[in-house]
Amino acid sequence: MSPDPIQLRSLRDIRVAVIHPDDEDARVLCEQLRRFGCRVTALWPEPNHLPEGTEAVFFSIQSERDAAHPWLAGSSHAVLIALLAYENPAVLEAAAAANVHGVLPKPIRPFGVLATLYVARMLFRYEERLLNRIAKLDETLRTRRIVERAMKILATRQGISEDEAYAIIRREAMRKQLPVSSMAESIVHAEAIYGLPPDRGTSDPAE
Image (cartoon, rainbow, N blue to C red):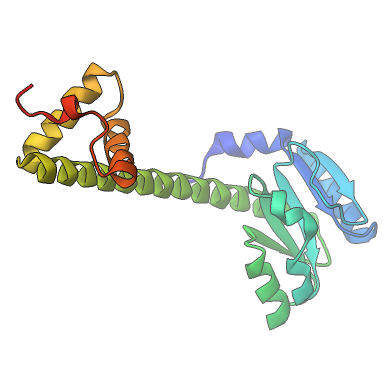
C-alpha cells in the first residue's frame, strides 16, 4: 500500500462531517479542514443520518457508549476518524467497535489533521479493495459449488461421468445464451423441487 499523490490532492474536494459539540476543538478542526479545501459540515446535536454524499466523518468518542452512534448504520461509504480526549481501555474499545480508520487526539491542533485524514482514507480504500476481493472470491466459490452440484445430479441421473455432465451443462448454457452458473443453478433448483432435471432433452448425452 503506497502513498498516492493524486489521492492527497483529492482531499481538497471531499465532503467531511464533523460531529462534535460547538467548542474550540470543533472550530479548530473545521477551520483546518476548510483550509485544505474540504467541504465541511459541522453537526451538533448528533444526527440520526449523515448528510448525503459524506465521504469522511470526524466524531467524538468519550466512553464505551459512544460506539452506538445512530448515524453509524449508514456510514459504510465514509472514512471514520475518532476524536479522543482519553486513552483509557473503554474509549479505545469503543473506537475499535466503531471500526474507525484513524484517531485524532484532543485538544485538536492544526498539525496532524491532514496526515490523519490522508492515512485514514488510504486505509479505507485498501479495506474496500479487500472486501471487494473477498466478495468476488465468495461468489466464485458459490458458483463452483452450484456447478459441481449440477454435474453430480446429471451424472447420477444419466449414468455418465461428471466431465460429460459438465459438457452438457456448458452446451445447453451456450444454446440458451446463459452463463454456465445460471444453467447449473436451474438444474439444482429443479432437482430440489421436482427431483428431476429441468429439461429432459437437455440432459441427454446423445444430443
